[in-house]
Image (cartoon, rainbow, N blue to C red):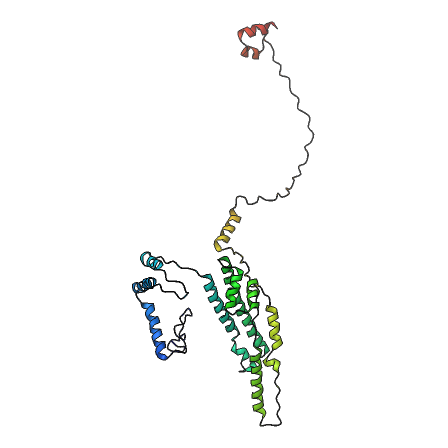
Length: 324
């Protein structure tokens, strides 16, 4: 639907940005193309697959310029498996065109060039909006840098990428900076700012033309803070587009396990040995060595043997001991 009708509208574009009809088409052409687009969305799958097989039989060509393969279409119809050829150059060319559109959209900031409400939109407001433009431009350029790095990891070399970007009308300086991962600050339009100043001067002249005693003076730096904008560009110049490595943050589970380990670890306390406090024990008083009392047993006068000898010796040993 055209923009502004019913629930809105995209002026002939799909949600993904594909063109259904152009603004120059007649009303009947817009209706026919819109109806065909809607029918394509609700068309039965069998009919769609049949059309693709017929295109393969007739040797038709895809939008990308590649031939429709009958084998691939039959495989998709029978087995549900579709072989997709990835054309890195074509994809990069599309991304480069999209990049140009987004960079132009960044500069399409009508507020900083508009004379409307200029009394309340001084240098600080303009500088803030220009700073936001730099942030948007950085995101767009960093995304393009990542796309180029992905292309380098596939089957494209740097010379191929330069050629694709040049064919997409990217300036040589921007191509070089993108390959090196350096940010090029968004520029401002000198001519649009001067047009804004001229409109304000003409308006002031109309307001004072009927009163010869009144004179006007427009501070051009207020409406066009040129050097303030250049300072912002200088601050952003050469900023790296290479994403910084993200620090892996501990999740709730990891933090919880770490806390439990600290509390119940069997190795807790084992580390660098600490100095132990020596307990000072007073020396013992000197005491004399104990004397062993002599344990002398008396011999029996009849046997000439001690009690121990009588108990432990054999009869023959007793006879020998009695003689000694």
